[in-house]
Image (cartoon, rainbow, N blue to C red; front, side):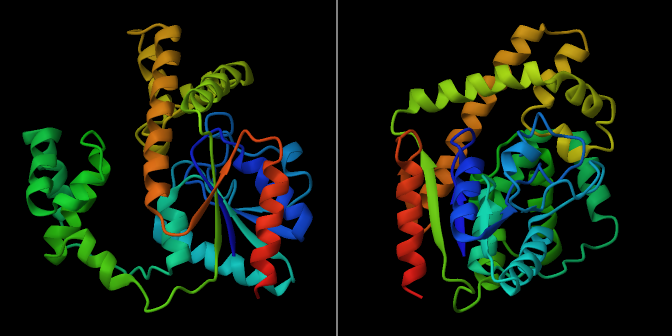
Length: 306
């Protein structure tokens, strides 16, 4: 199994395609937002032209009102890996959703967790009464490791972690330890793309946002804003929520665009932190003129080991 990971705007899609062309591979997308139909510009979804005819799986598979979890991803990716391998092709994971990549390659087993009836509604009521800060503080008290990995403003994940603790009496870290198999299911090579010069990455992110505006991100963002009650995942996604103040008439388009650039840079930092902590990532200079040749050589050596 080969994976291409790294922060946003580092050229993962192009490298994944190049490797698939060279090694007769097929791509499994590891992006938690590109699964949604109709959300193309804001998610930087791979275009038909960019695929160069290489099959890309896990893209455009759900309408934006449907939830999709890491458990759903690992189940889907496992099925796709078996199908791709059966065709004699090389499965290549490509994407920046670190939780998806790590959970799949480590073989994390997800159990069906049934929360007590009414618990989710009770937590929602507590959130409305006490506020997000108080709920995050409660999580910090009962599961500091989970709290450290969740942004205080991400109320969905905060409530989810609290729900898990109240339902099971266990921390998420404890569940994670119990869910790992004795051995990893795949022999994997993980290629990480990054720019040694952080300013170069930020320039690429800013340019990508400018191109998104030209490509029509605003109509997509407005669609998400209008359906924010049902498009819950997309309504919290970077690329859409930053424009909500513009549609509400309380902020200028320029201010919202600047906010998106900053949010994207912050997201890239979080992605880098995640992948830097992952075991065995081989880092490549995304801006090097020979990055594709280096990646191809590295994959060739990996496959030759058998």
